[in-house]
Image (tube, rainbow, N blue to C red; front, side, top):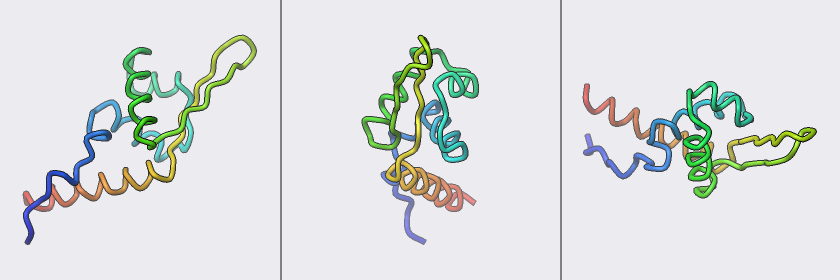
Length: 100
């Protein structure tokens, strides 16, 4: 069996909060900011930073608009993000299988 390649673990996704965002979006397809904040137990500032990092990587798209006078931010996985998440899960599976 070939040695595990640590470079197969995507650093952008691997952070706990970003992993939570990606895992939630893989199932929900789209989520608004307050939903993510509640589900992940995140602060507004912390969540904003992690969403921006995922957006810069091209893994999510962010849509900002107003509903009435209130801002509404929605996050959605991109095709690149779906592929990256699948590769991340596959890499973790190979790592775990190699430790058994």
